[in-house]
Length: 284
Image 1 (spheres, rainbow, N blue to C red):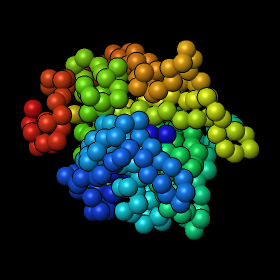
Image 2: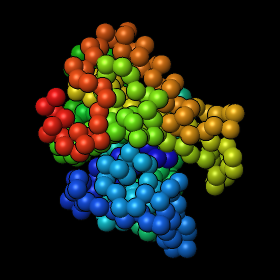
Image 3: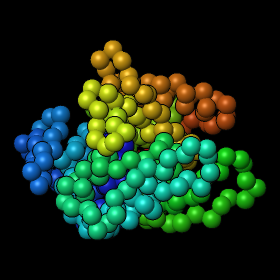
């Protein structure tokens, strides 16, 4: 789902095909690629990469992805753990599926940019968010505390990871899709996601969803990554920002308390203009 949009922006920034100031035209709110229609919930007009993440624009993500070579994007997905084994050897683990690069067409690339056309598990998604939280480095997972940190691989530049992390803060701020994930005193970066559940023989189930929120806390010195999934939310509300974000807040608040993580020494109400000026944000 849309939890993949920050990675689309990250790869494009890192490859130099966009900048933080690039404008992506998402009008009129829909587009067709190889006969398939891609839509946004609203016509967002011309927006920046930050706003693609904040407003969760499918069209913005797709247009950014199509600036990359298909093999570049596919390789990056694999590098961050999508469609790969976690290395934890858990019973019944499914590593998901990622099409071979030679089979990717424009529609596959566009769909992957906003989290469709492949499958993954929650641990793989958390491992991917660890790359953004860990200054662009991919680290092996472990279920036990290690005496020495495992060797990490640099996947994207540290400055790219930091830029995307700060863009993700706007998701939790006013005007984003998940203000219900905000935690008083802490800078929270995250992304919502809402996906149709897959059928056992391929395709997607109608009116059956997973609601997600993936987050990093605290932004000033990332300590925890959490991916929270609500399976088949009921009562007619199924969006990640409405369903998963408030549960993320409750669980993360308790985790911060148990780990004794100090609050960020900033004003939690991050304005949109401050997020655009990363230098100003870092100076607060």
